[in-house]
Length: 332
Image (cartoon, rainbow, N blue to C red):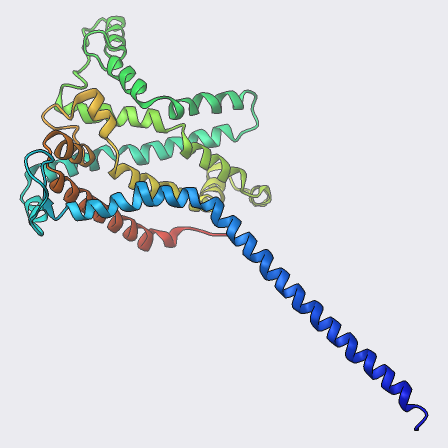
């Protein structure tokens, strides 16, 4: 037993040395790992920094500034900001034009379900294996990437009561039938101004991003589901209602939510270029009313108050929609 002690001692020393070396290696590895993670974090924040700085300078700070402006009266010219508390918000409750322009905004949002249905139909058509679908996708998407000002100027010519395309086609159709037909005053008649805007909005958005989103969603539906339905004898409508519609419901929910948010904030460009908010305020939306208060009448505090009320309306509608309609979404 004594003769084996030196050998055992050597093995023990080697084992301890190995443990020490292993421990040192693991410590170095941990330090290097921490350094790598720190470098990755620094690089990640470096890439995010331009966007974060832009968000702070051009979004967060202006939003907070508008909140402060909603509690003051300020006309930009004669005097500095004067604190008035909630006076701007109380004035808003007595403003008859605010309710009218909210109603105008809601009516113009009737274009949303029409354009969504049209986008889905176009996406279904373009999802078929037909020749020339790439060309049709490009053509349908063109109005989305064209200048809004150019589009609105074009539609103002189309709606011209004297030589516009729609009224000219109406007169020619009447001549074919032996009747004297005249088109309406699209942009100068209160009864026709909002329908004119709705038609234009549907045309502009039906082949845009919503169509692309629906097309991507349709291409993500498994073909195996349709094959199983065909084996069970399902027709086209049954396959659409029981397979396609549930499978694309997350996309529908997203499009509807974003369209509602955008709808409350829409209507400025069309009104400013085509009608000036007329006739008799029939095409003035909440956004255009904010613009008029801020930059036409220089009521900055009141305009900021309207902006925050609009934000609360959008927030409430979004929460309600998420709470009651989010359950109908099928996530797979």
